[in-house]
Length: 91
Image (cartoon, rainbow, N blue to C red; front, top):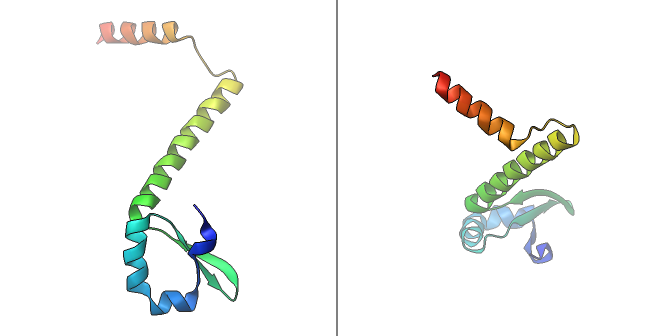
């Protein structure tokens, strides 16, 4: 993805909002909006946004798991399975 072709000033956003929304839905690429020559916001279609949020959630889960492994907060899988079986028998 090449963002350099997806950078527009805020005046373009104001003048072409409907067109931008139509184009974003088809491309899946974000649009960077500038104000006074500086990047200020990123606009993207909802599907891309949801995919990004799901990816971030998975990365957070992976990071948490990695941290728990590093801290030694792990148990052998056999022990966990046995404990779950024992719990099931008690119910």
